[in-house]
Image (spheres, rainbow, N blue to C red):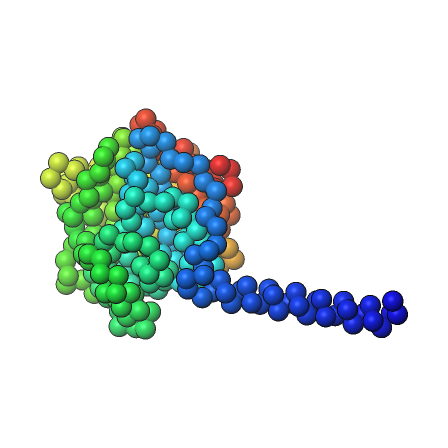
Length: 318
């Protein structure tokens, strides 16, 4: 075959390949074709096991709490980007929840971006909305998706609780509907399961941390809800507030908590340079033996709680 014909054939094949890739990219970016992406390969949850999946969704937040009865609570849903949304969808397909609920800790788009898609593609039982909403296009899209899905809605404030087999969740903050700072109205959740204590802090700042600290100093049982007690004096796992920003993870707060394990959700090479050096220093000062797990370094981080103990691993290690 002459050289010119061979070159022309290669160019045509290359062009076809490019068009095919572009077509597939468009196809999987359009609903519902994105749901054709395969589920992640995950080991099945063991009997009586609680798992928390801290997903690597870039500079955002998404924590999937997988309860022993098969229910999944998605605490935040990333920024809504293509990669983030498809990761969460593929992960949920792998978990195959018996029931699914969504919780928006606060109204920053990096905490609920994927939820409109999930509300269309999964059967959602309850959507917990933030105390302080925002009148922007992204949040209005979320409200529209919630209305279309027809799921139950609720707003969590202090003393609200969810009792589960083997444990419970208690909301510590916000306190009332008179609050006006978006980050500090983040839902703060205390999860107790099988003797393991876990605190999820949303994007609260050091000012909210210190307020909680002062209240707890007045009466250690101040956050208890019915028979669900809240013991902050030495916890096992802390989901670091606000991605490890310089305006959170105050030394005073951490000195009370003294976590054994820190989980930091942040994007690789993020423009905020989270986690900040000051936050990391406070982690190490409050808990010299504590271990720090970062989604920007490890990818998805999975905590398994069973038999009054827990293990931490990256998804790649499973």
